[in-house]
Length: 97
Image 1 (cartoon, helix red, strand yellow):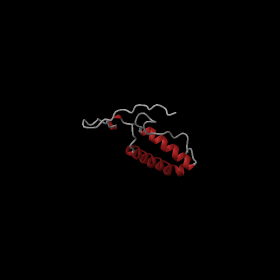
Image 2 (image 1 turned 60 degrees about the vertical axis):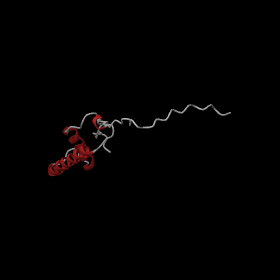
Image 3 (image 1 turned 120 degrees about the vertical axis):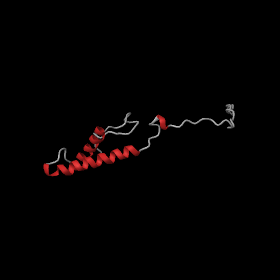
Image 4 (image 1 turned 90 degrees about the vertical axis):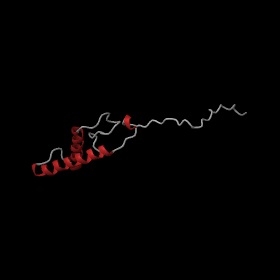
């Protein structure tokens, strides 16, 4: 895998990935897969189209991922039920000899 591509989802990237972040990752991917740092003139259109399509797919992927614990608003707090039966804590037992 290309080491220049960074993880774009929380919590690795603390804030939401920008379009520039997504495009840079797509460009690095296309460069790695194609073996070209910059395409020749006759391949430029195909190269740019691939970068655009991968950037779009990446944005859709990031938009649909659900990362547990990444968004504080999404974390549910569990409130105890008033009718819940509470059991006393277990006392430590003496070691058997």
